[in-house]
Image 1 (cartoon, rainbow, N blue to C red):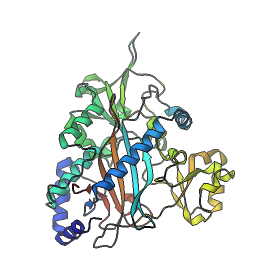
Image 2 (image 1 turned 135 degrees about the vertical axis):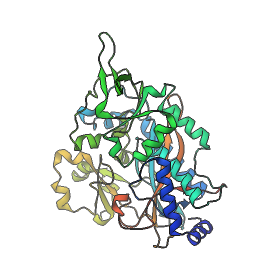
Image 3 (image 1 turned 90 degrees about the horizontal axis):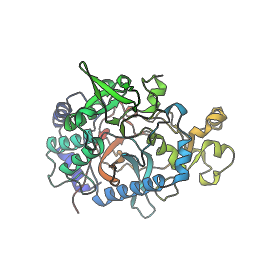
Image 4 (image 1 turned 90 degrees about the vertical axis):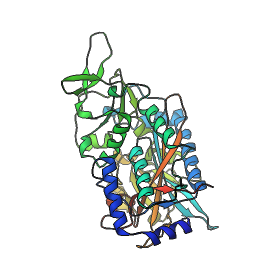
Length: 409
């Protein structure tokens, strides 16, 4: 978007430099990065990055501070996954934005979705540094948000994830973590914070008479009590894989959550119809739309609509221009779990050798106990076509995961 930086990067780009960058990235995260990394970082005005960070924070507070909304979203949590000891706010937030061209020619951010769930905070920090080093980017270019430095970013990560506990008593837990594409993030996180990676299925309830049950993990022959869980397990995956956990979400344990499971549902696609904001494309729950409620919020032209399941990941189940037959085929009992949203034309503003490419910018936030919501950095997904996810841009170049740099203004 910043023409001088874009032109300079494209002119200096060499495929061999990109290949060296990928090798360097694998070395830094101590595993192979299996998803596609774009050939280029992106260059945005800091004012635009700050605007997106501010909008995401505003929308988050509108939801977190709305008791009736939280009651409604809690009712959407599958009964078996309604976890005890819900925290007063999410510890992690993401807000995804695309860019639209206004009538006056200005580019403005529009919300794609929000999710109160950890993203690849640690990996993205490394990716930014690898881009800077490999392509010899100007050292004055920034990427951290909210006035953070490298030191303050990692200090805040430690505060949110460890909260003063000994690293041995804090674990990052996930479903089959060593097989996840996000393993590079797990590696960096656990190395920087000194905590363990533990499969959620390997957690051990430790029942003691007269005391609150603890959760533990095995380290060699020792059973180590867990004081705080950095939760990276997505409930959708537990459901799809039919995984039976060794503990019950309903039970109250002598453990703190860093990323309580309920917030994955509280702030998600379910939130969008509840948000009346200029940066949020209007959306209606499918059951309401089929019953004739709130239909005036959406265009009549079906080509301008998109159907989204509320709880899915990696863009699964999304349908463009859904037909009457498709909508009618969804059982009435399931329609509350879908929404219809106005489809927005996002601009392809990143000039690459493969042609104009569309960025989707994710703002990443941390919210420590006793603190406030803070934007810390961003990530970018580059794509060409209807879907932005890396799985939808296979066999293409100059697409995939990227990073956002800005010149100081």
